[in-house]
Image (tube, rainbow, N blue to C red; front, side, top):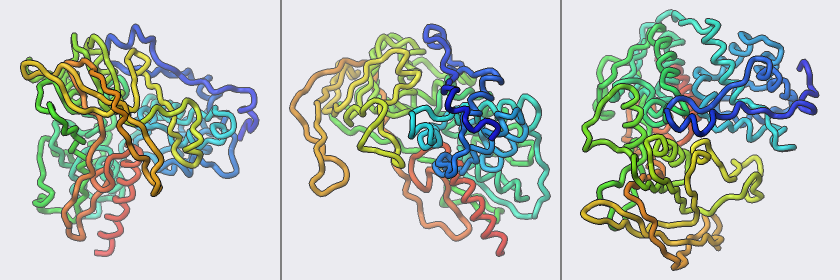
Length: 447
């Protein structure tokens, strides 16, 4: 490292977000960036640990200390080369990854000021596009063909790795454009879709074929391929089957998020089909990232108020002794959307929806307690009897997704990402896509 003691006198500096009063009026990206000098200073804070826990924590195995050192020294192209050894889409993870690496950074564990690894990664990726470091490759074809079903993170990762090894890859997807959750689930204010389009042009130039708008039955796969990768994600959202669920105005989170992204992409919908929060009291049920995305989207659409409830108790701020490292720290997370204005509440279970003239007007909720399980494992939920009505004329269910049940596939069919493991992080889907691509290569190499 050029300056192994920089962490002692250079504090962590995040790029931060655009001003709230400005960003809630549009759907453009909320996160800002640092200039090159400040970014290099942030990279200098990496202390070149003897055991780099950041590398251990990253599902992709990114070599964080190595690319931080190159960035600090101003060797942007070398930093990008190191990053691309493990990560095919740093422009995605640099924007939306929850940065497991930073939660394991020694500077996080010692003084709660980890290196800005995620932001540095994004900066390197943007420099690579800006300076022309990214150029399409022209692999030597090996004569074998692979079909990838699903153009989400896992499918794209699988396709890129196999294409680089010389396979002729065709991606099938039911949606009009590739990206999966990246395009149809994550709001534009977190991931601008031009970032996806830019990368897809590279993939097409490298010879990957895209068959969009094509629905494939995984039990009747298209003929003519030597192997198949099923990368269809987790399409079924977890429902809330309580009385009143059939009232109008109750939607799954992705019904809103996907439609808003499609509208921004130029699609139109009839008025009666719009899932829009303008002028409404919105209740978001579910305290995770998807619920946060619903908050930001509702605010931008013009909601009168937004309330988010979570059945689990409120986690502590900063540090949680119940989840010490190397566990994921369960602490209070305040996103850019939360900062924009919403009421957040915890330990509330939903009993039934209330409606009038067939439309939802509120939800009866009940406070719950979480008690230690005498048998160990997940705590036991106990209703307290304290009930109240939360008024709402739009309810968004953001409670996660069900793990899909896959049929028994023949040996030349492989399953990757959320389709195999259940809903998880984009970075984990990318990592599993790389793993499955290697499995397919190993299988076909023996044929």
